[in-house]
Image (cartoon, rainbow, N blue to C red):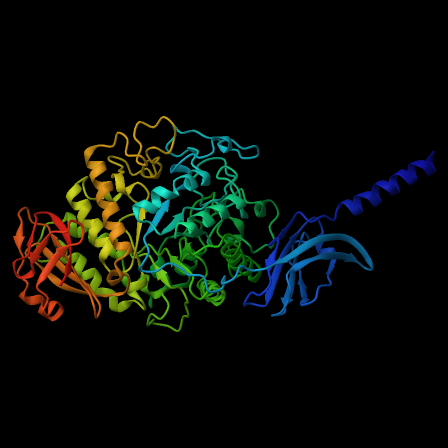
Length: 613
């Protein structure tokens, strides 16, 4: 009996040794042959996986190294891919001595033709920002998903309402008809959080779309169907933090993976500390390393394994889904040396990729610092093409709302644009009336339809790449509330039984229908207006409640006039002769009305776009 028990015990021990080796995560799960950067680093996660040594045999793939951290459950496997490596599958064998303990199939895929030279977004585009949970519920079956703690609750402003990727796909024709050429979706990756997960900014898996939105395959289908309608897809990327429900938090890849030793220390949000010549290291660290909230652990991009992981993840999504661009959340919060490496690696793979960073500062010097080719106070290197123009956004709202005085009103817009000397590429900035984190533009402008139309004309015709927030075209608003759940209310018509339907126009108010029709005319005109896409901006200092600027090239001149006055004005045009030269006729591009330039009359409280001849 004792011998039998001893034999059973040995079997159990032996079985436990074998069972301890398993690959729970291997990321990225596949890669592509023919990438510009020859190195690939695989994160391998499983119980005591560091005790094993990987091996592989595939022509053009070299196992360049194996690195371990202070957590025995991780391996980082470095591969070097030859320029002529062929697509195909091969096994990664995990060895203990001469014995294969595990075998994992890996694949190098073929890239689509022209992938590296894909077009990004530029001034010819109009970006439409969608909060996916709030746009349209195309598949009610995924409102509740096993394993996801938070289910649907459309009665809760901060709850999940059921919008999804399928709902966006179903309404691509509407967006195309509206004049949209690029879609930016708030994050769609898995957010397995207990509550307030709909916004997407608490990632719990960098390689999986949240099943309440759909799947990786459906996300790629969205990009393909958008592409068939000449629309690109921009992915929202979060490099600064994860959600506390991320699987890393149950088994940290390294002890320094999360800032402040994994303990909550709130960020100061003092981005000035990065540039302050009188500043301190304490202020710099407590800005970049501090957490947003307890549920968003702050990532330490100084860890080289994490830095490489984040870079490869972005490249993976661009290649997998066929993206046209990336929107980089809370841009200045991650480690700045990492951001330099990140932008250079992404532009190395995709020289024309659209990439815009969120640096929410009203100081143009701080925003400009991050853009490529900006003349900086230090030798910092950035390859970031674009940033959101928060200074201009604030200036437009203030300029339209404030009275016309020596220092306020339209001259605030003029002064903001006069700061363009600070930027490496001011024409590549993304300009926007609002976004998902601030009050709707209609609310910011006091629910005034005239001011709304003036703002729409300005953002559609000034220098830069315009971005609009879903529902702006039907005057979505948030009166009396700054709650983000209210700001991100459901798009009317996206759910069965909605009393209003902006997709069909059913039951819209007269003001909503007029705004939608105006936006549609404006953006579809802009789609073909090459002088706005490529032309120079020349503006004149505001006088008597009017602001005049031109978009022009060697062949065409477009004149934009904002008239804030309560009466129509006949605009003196003599001072514009250095732009208008011998031109004498002005045609309103939206109405077709023709006037003599010398006697140009602009209606009260309006913005007009004139093609000059």
